[in-house]
Length: 176
Image 1 (tube, rainbow, N blue to C red):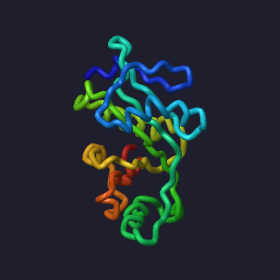
Image 2 (image 1 turned 45 degrees about the vertical axis):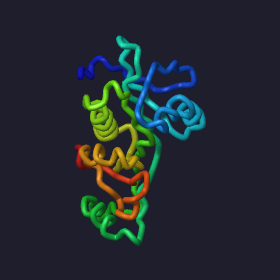
Image 3 (image 1 turned 120 degrees about the horizontal axis):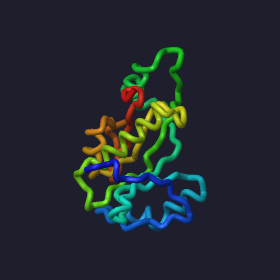
């Protein structure tokens, strides 16, 4: 896919969302029913990737602030996280950026669009440094965990392995 044809825009209350269809009803519904409201309430910022030639929304993603907090029941995971952070900088909380939603138009599935979005987010928050944060987090739908694993995300815990979503993280220091 030629990603240079795509335009990224930040959603606003006046944005006319171009046609978009994905397999997950929840992700489709969020874009058309809730994304503008979340934006207006300062709860999440949504970005659209559009192919203006085809007059279609290729993908969208929503970002919001998050943090990773020490859980005494998950010492092994916390130790693994801390291993990459110098001792004087270790804390009980670390700043993170949450990918609240990420969806790709089903007509563009398996063309690398999702990975392009993830890499663009990683780039923006490590190279451009829009905000100080060490980790990306996501509550991945069970059906999407393989995608996130392929993009370097790890599970926080095994306790949620039977849940509809799994909490995952990516250490942005691994991207630089």
